[in-house]
Image 1 (cartoon, helix red, strand yellow):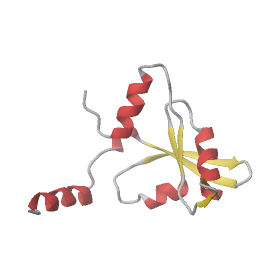
Image 2 (image 1 turned 135 degrees about the vertical axis):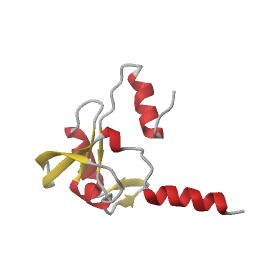
Image 3 (image 1 turned 90 degrees about the vertical axis):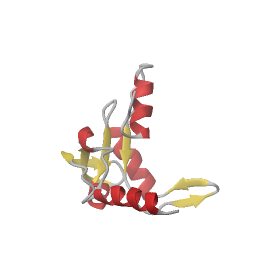
Length: 116
């Protein structure tokens, strides 16, 4: 069975076990204290994940803005109050646009093929 991405392969495999993954993505500065990762970016990602439905990935507006030009398209899920953080607009990537090669990744693959 072919999957367009490793992440999708994992989700599909565990779905067969009756487990649905909820995921939330945000990016920002993190800090490591006593070997544990923390900071506002980690808390924001956790709050975004808490709003996802089973089997769904939600991303913050920051993530959506950073992947502009990648070919990934999003469905606007509205503005949500994230506990202890404030209001954030959330998006769900359209599955048919994930795992598709972008012009840059195709060019990188072609260059790799040319390297001895």
